[in-house]
Length: 296
Image 1 (cartoon, rainbow, N blue to C red):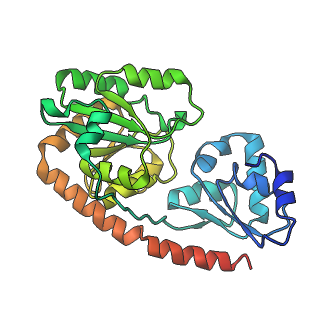
Image 2 (image 1 turned 30 degrees about the vertical axis):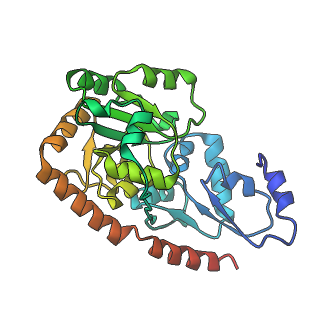
């Protein structure tokens, strides 16, 4: 709703506001410049991974951090990236909570997605992401379509909102055999769809910490993720998930997952244990409560 620091400064000039939290050091944090109230910053991922490369944005983010009471990074790696440029960055893992719908109909979902469920078994991989360039939804499309031509049972569903993305990108996905651009789902239905699919896919070129990955782990769904720092920070290859560096490696690992139930069982069991230990939403709540005390 707001586009400039002046608008936020005017908004917070009343006595209705005591403090603020900004998510994403540049997109959210820049709007708090000039505001009279104390605030804390929560990194988003692209701010540390991408925006820091731009001199103008880096200067703005540095100015915001000078005034912030605290700054939060979700991984040690992200904290170290930020600390190399700025100081005073804390770090903790984010928590998640999954609530799959109990009334979700998997076969209706496949029918609405135009996936031929009746002709035989369906092996659906779900790529959950906002359709924007940094999520790189086209990364796997060509290789996956080639695989689908040889094995029509495999399908890739790309599900999420279109965020500042050219229509040609969506069109390219829609025309690829075996690849389906699906409508957004409410969170509970999305969790239910995840629980029914073969695996969760992440093909991002840059990532902070993917909530979709953590949710899949909690739902005991295997994760295949691109081997980038943000993903490797929470996935140990062949222990809590599978990391791929090329589209061809993704296909090979997917085939291994489909044909090796022991591998799948081991991955989802260890991933569930990891999430329960490191990504508790109760723990996150307590951490934020303690951080907010610093704003008083």
